[in-house]
Image (tube, rainbow, N blue to C red):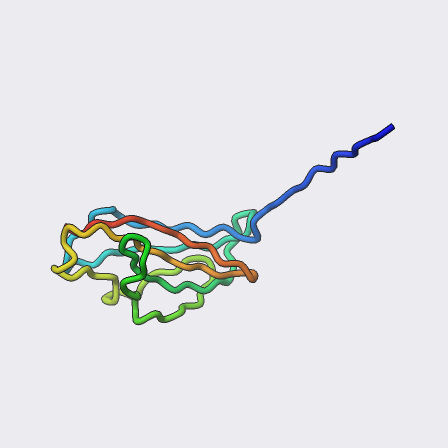
Amino acid sequence: MLSVIALPVVLSAPFKATLHAPTHTPRTTTPWVISIRATDPEGRPIRARVTMRFLFAGVPVGKVDNGRVYTFTGTWREKKGQEIEFPATSRGQRLTFQALVTARRHTVKLNYWVQPR
């Protein structure tokens, strides 16, 4: 007789990362204010790192802040006056904004499509 014992397997992510942006169609040469939040599974703020880039058709085409890696606890925002601005040449191009958030030895990719107008 063959018996099988089923044990519940709980796979939980070590943290949760979210991206908040005002619009998918930002205006060129106007600040685009975003925020990134990192929490544990219970919703408490945790320490994390973030670097950001832009993709075109899945291929990296640009880095935000020259690829700088920021360390933060809880919520990250660009400093006032240093927000992301899209150049006029990006008007009408569909891009993917990608934030790579690393915490607790794991990395989460947050993708957000944008098409500057």
